[in-house]
Amino acid sequence: MFSCYTVFVLKNVTVTLPEEVAYWARTRAAEENTSVSRLIGKMLEAQMRQSDDYADAYRRWKALPGLEIDAANRLTRDEANARR
Image (cartoon, rainbow, N blue to C red; front, side):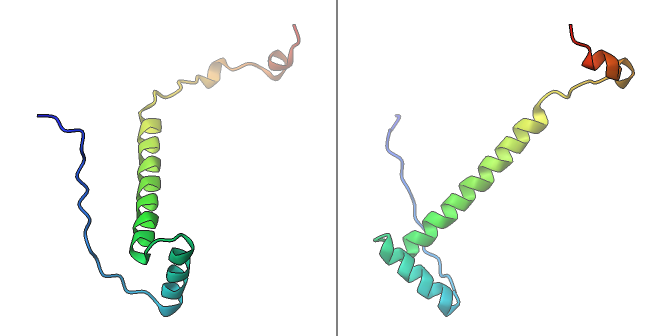
């Protein structure tokens, strides 16, 4: 049976931060009306997606057919600049 519901499983992790970073994270989380845990989760998810997007784009670029250029048949400077 097909279900349109997706189950998200959240995992708890412990993160050790320098006091200065923890202070910044608490302040930033308060500004965004969220918890430090959710703030860090959103930041890591954005980083993951950015990394995945780059990797996917690179794989697509590598899969493109190469240009076969024959330097022996190139135009001379005069031919390239000729106005018709």
